[in-house]
Amino acid sequence: MTTQPTALDTYLQRLPMILGKIESLRQLAADHFGQDPDAIHWGHVGDLGRVGQALDDLLAIFDGQAK
Image 1 (cartoon, one colour):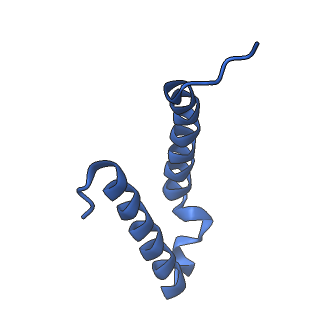
Image 2 (cartoon, rainbow, N blue to C red):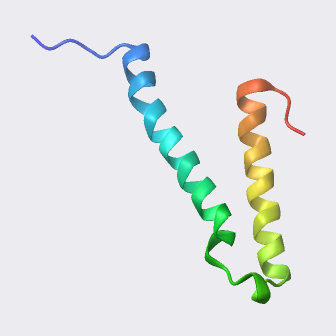
Image 3 (tube, rainbow, N blue to C red):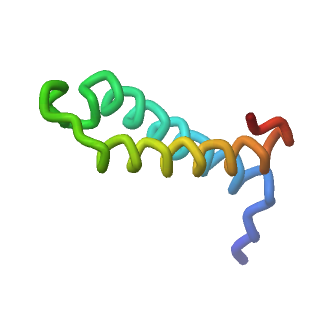
């Protein structure tokens, strides 16, 4: 007989994956997301605007205080 995982089990399993993705974003940001700082153009600015909006949306889900 197998038991079904609980919500907590699944939550705790997913949390490290999320934290790993956050750390990957930190590392990418520290390297200008792989872009040469001298070659940044408005398309890159737009990309970061979309990323910022997506992060605000995620923050709103979890704490309701997106800026």
